[in-house]
Image (cartoon, rainbow, N blue to C red; front, side, top):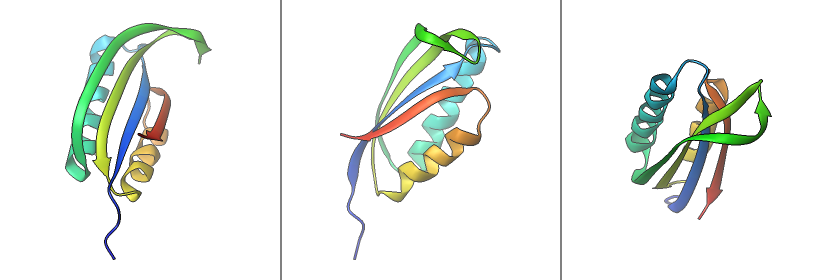
Length: 96
């Protein structure tokens, strides 16, 4: 039986410790990662925003929201890669 396709939304907060260009490289890295295994619908870059509280002594983060459609195993793999990638402060994947 084929796995059901779901619509997901992934919000990421990237570190600005290495500059905004490094954060944009991470945005592109995950854009390509998602597009290779899912149907990427939209990438909404919010850019640099002040965090509600410091994370790893950083007051600001680079926010991005990815909207995509995929089978249930794809978000799990993307979360795994996000968890081991340097420069990712926080991420959250939700079903839309």
